Image (cartoon, rainbow, N blue to C red; front, top):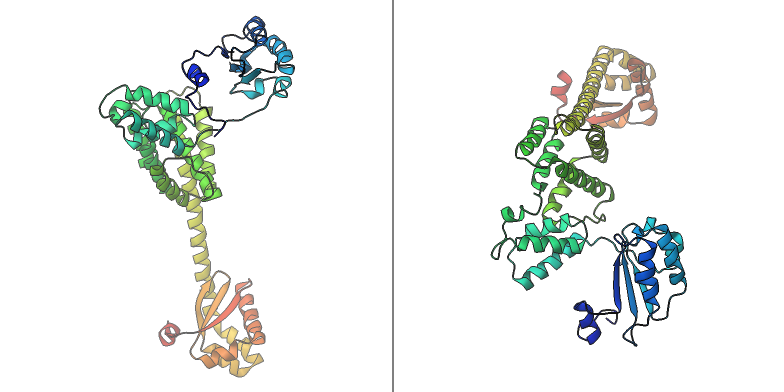
Length: 406
């Protein structure tokens, strides 16, 4: 690519060895004032580049740290720069840069690098440097770097300096904070089956082992967030997570409803960030899990009560029909004596909410009763007895004799 440096020509070699006089870098965090801008940039920009065919490049890192007076002094030079001068302004907080400066620049936004790409780059480095390090550690380095390759390479350098042979997880933990994904996975699994004892025991076990609870909670919130987003968006959601966690995450997405995930996240945020300086460090997290599972239990109780209520109603309806079946038969006989005789030999086979199924002995009986006008008359009699609207169906019962006798 034409835009990529060759790293072979004289100019590239000078830049790589930090000997190029046409590359001027300034850290705005430590050179904030107007005098620094005038001396290091404005005055220097008026001097032609040493390479007559090239450019003089000014790189101002953390440019948002400049004072208002320094920005005003820089503005004039940016409006009318020398033909052989290029300014590169770098910042992580673009909202702090004056609009007058931004409007006179080309803006390039750099996004976080996906974990898989960082892991790929780390693998290239370890192969080149002949460093023997497990993939699990590389995945954790990529996650901790939060999309920044420079931070990932720095962590890798620190860890690889611990040993010239194999890098173990125990060695890496001296620099890399311990990963809690396995413990988080166990905790979320316990929550999915409403097991409060296991959930609370898991937290206290980790605290006894001396984990950093703040890091654990942040990892837990991040994991639950990704589960919720995958649950809502589906396979199209770009999961920035290591391969070994994908299977577990997708499984949890099927075990929780979207509403449950939202409630759990809300409860965690409320308890953890609203209870300041608790006497027992794990107490806010314990209260959050307790509140979530108690709410889930109440819903189960309510749901169970509704099922029992529905069953009681169906049993009650069945008793009403049994006690007043002769009344139904008499009502039909008034309309049609032969149909009344058929109804007399039928019986309520099943009651499902607002649907009643009448069991019959013969297909012929079904053909006689399953007519619109006849069904309306029978339904009318059933509605009067039950004091509610019901739908009526007929079915030839293979076990007619036994069921009719019961």
